[in-house]
Image (tube, rainbow, N blue to C red; front, side):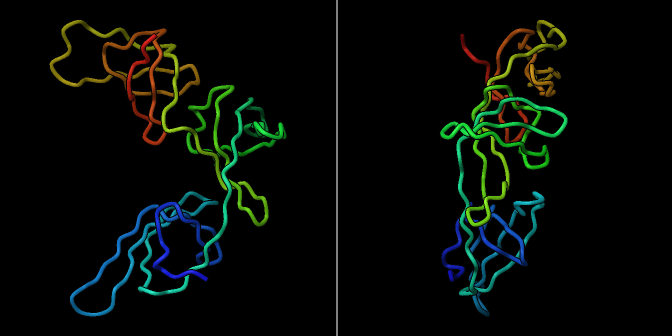
Length: 188
């Protein structure tokens, strides 16, 4: 069994009978009293983030998770379908387990996270940046560049992203999947 000295970002632990990933932690040594570790834990089954404080030296139960490469195939009424790029096995995942389902494009490479002990899917992570084509946006007015004004644009996957005024229909952009924000225009 591990202790709080082993805590690091991304570590998966069992806490209150459920699986959590450590999103953020801070070691605190107050002037009076014992040290403690303040953490933010993300529930891997529900996605909910909670705060918790561990006393220094407390025992934690580390869980093993595996990240496997998959490719997004298609969406149907039952969920999203993916194919393992090494074994060619196909699995189906519900939208609640996917970080940004409306940014998925057919053929996209993703990582699916499995609990190593019982082979249960815990989540699906997209790459940090994805390239998408703009299928609809209002034209930007020339001269509106004094401020960093943004306009709404619809991508080929149906996601609506705020983009700068100079982006037009048919252009490809990079989108940050963690924040749903415009990153840059793709140079062709």
